[in-house]
Amino acid sequence: MRWQGQTIDDADAAALPGLENRTGIVHSVTTPEFAGMTFHEVLAKSALNRVPGGSRMPFSWTINPYRGCSHSCVYCFARGTHHYLDLDGGGDFDSQIVVKTNVAEVLQRELRRGTWNHETVALGTNTDPYQRAEGRYRLMPDIIRALAESGTPFSILTKGTLIRRDIPLLVEAATSVPVDVQMSIAMYDDELEHSIEPGTPSTQARLDTVRALTDAGFRVGVFLMPVLPHLTDSVEQIDQALRRIKASGADHVIYGALHLRAGVKPWFLQWLEREHPELMSSYRGLYPGAAAEAPRAYRQWLAKRIRPLIRAHGLEARHSDDAYPERTLTRPAVLTPPAPPPQPTLF
Ligand code: SF4
Image (cartoon, rainbow, N blue to C red; front, side, top):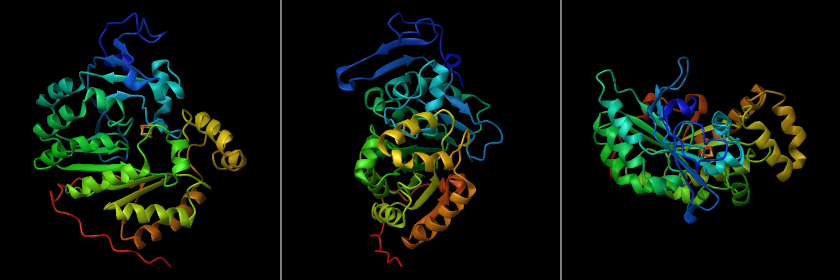
């Protein structure tokens, strides 16, 4: 979706060079607390985006308060979407963040329409709603309130520990609508995590956030994806990850192998060549030409390896293709502390 179709006709001469004549930029802001980043504040015309027909996802609508993401994951599949803004999918995606400052207000209007039928709305399916900009703009609290007050179920997927700020609000929302919360935590080696997800909170901070959400009564899922061939797919690495996930109180694990769509592949391969040149030929073999998915044989091999491990740790295994079954959208048992995790015995 082109963002200029979402915004008003009002440009700012101080906007990002090249975008001065584009419609919709109200302000381009830099501040010392966010060195190296520019926030392009826009007024959105709509907040709810319809998921294209034929999608396998069990939600029909999404909300993306931000475009671009300061979490800067090298493998981020959304990188290609920045091209629609005439920005690149590399450094621009990480640092030129479009902020829909009026998103909650527009959402409230949309939810009041008689035609709104309260289908599940997903947040965090494109860029992260709890990325750093949220600390400044605080768009999520009003979005959560608007969804809950209108009786609309919703799900949130994030790597942002900032979600802890909104736990009381989420608990309150869950008393009136189903609320599903998932944390994305794929790297369990600090060095690799710093290198490939340079803008994210640490793995441990995210696990601590799973604990906080679990303690608040949510059945939290952890996205253990992308699994990186040769980098994070050994039995030892998966086992260590699952041990920490289980200890955090998570309920289930959603796994999936690395996807490399056209918009992200060059950026990922650039990183791989710099950090792991020895793996270049292997990755070119796994993701040849325009191939976005790892070969079926690798995905089957991964499933065979990871599913028994997930079960051995007492967690429920889901593949990314069935990551959002409706039954996960359940009201949490608010304020029921989870039982201490059993120590699994592996093999
Ligand atoms: S947190 Fe999600 S949206 Fe943000 S860069 Fe990482 S993968 Fe992309």
